Image (cartoon, rainbow, N blue to C red; front, side, top):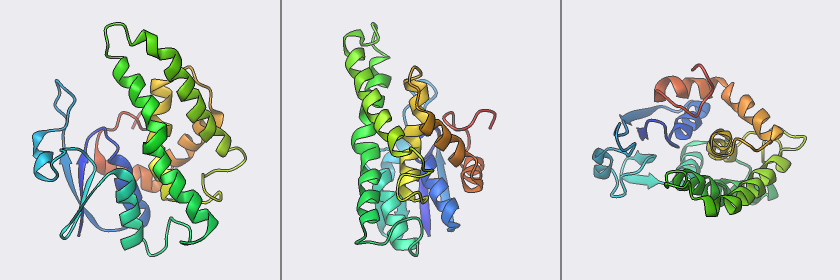
Amino acid sequence: MLTVHHLNNSRSQRILWLLEELELPYELKCYQRDTSTNLAPPELEAVHPLGKSPVLTDADNTVIESGAIIDYILRRHGNGRLMPRPGSIEHEQYLQWLHYAEGSAMLPLMLRMYTGRLPDGGAALQPRIDDELNRHLGYMDKALEGVDWFVGNTFTGADVQLSFVVEIAPLLHPGGSFANLAAMRKRFQSRPAYQRALQKGGKYDFGPPGQ
């Protein structure tokens, strides 16, 4: 049985969404952030030493990192769904997008979040962060020109992985205008599986308003 160790208001929400898309059975173990520090509780360290979420356990396997978890679920349990055929050009594109989300796109967003906690808001770094946000979000927005999804205009695990970037971008870079990303966000947030994942995962501040 797959078990998702899920932290409220975190990237693990997309793992629940993926499992709902695949209609796979899973066990959900929920953890709550500390109301003072917003950090994950120490109980997560008993699952994995880093104490981060998401964590997926499957029998004797413990998998961390959202991209690795998505890859594991689709290879082991997806039966060919939500990923292109291995060896195809589309599969190479899929792998690039799958890793791009956390490897590149999240970095300037995290810098914006952390520098915003400094007394001066990290003023000296903000122009560079803005440039990087515009570069990466603009790159993603252009990739969606005329299509609904990132790989071959077909919904895949890469779209699930990139969803967190698409959801938090307007919160951390509200001055940006990326119409294709906004349309994608509305599109995936309306999917029945996404809605089911919200119901199971609990409060999620980055999802659609009024949830």
